[in-house]
Length: 225
Image (cartoon, rainbow, N blue to C red; front, side, top):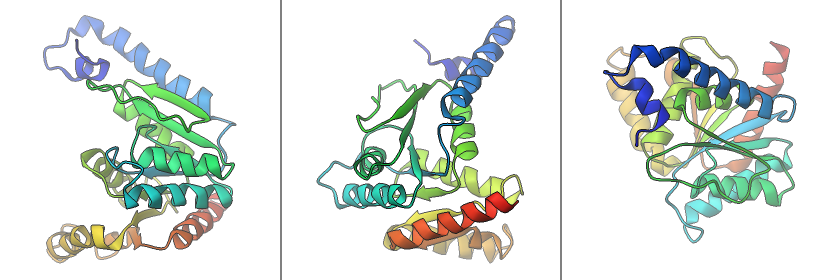
């Protein structure tokens, strides 16, 4: 059985079904707005792998990160799954903050984690991405796979093209991200594929307090726009 977004993207999809598909998309986006509007104030989106277990040091880092943001008044929004998403939601909940999970329908079921105050499972990746950007003041990115990198470069593209402003993208873990940063500088910046200022759209740190403060200051500047 095909997932809903798989049917949408299929080359041979029946054009007669397009109106129904568009209505499902509209309904899903509307449901996301109704769930989050007025209930999520200052918020940060945290991304990372679904694979680490609670005994992994990265899980502890993500849990501490969630607590740190909750303590500074941020809601924490994740993809709602296990691993580092669960850890960030867990930390936010333990610190008394608002914990939000925006899950996605997948062929291999990935259940929502149990540390959520608000949650929704999306059929369409792009509808879900709208919610992450619309309702957060920053993206904080922990180590992860293709899905994590997708969210990272989505935010960078929106920043580079001026679709969003004063929106920090913070990478947690200097050791993990150093190779990517070096590649972007040598292969993208130095060869003219991105502007010299583009790489400065990213902040890499191991300091969770620094990440929280950066998100807070950018949130204040967003309010002034």
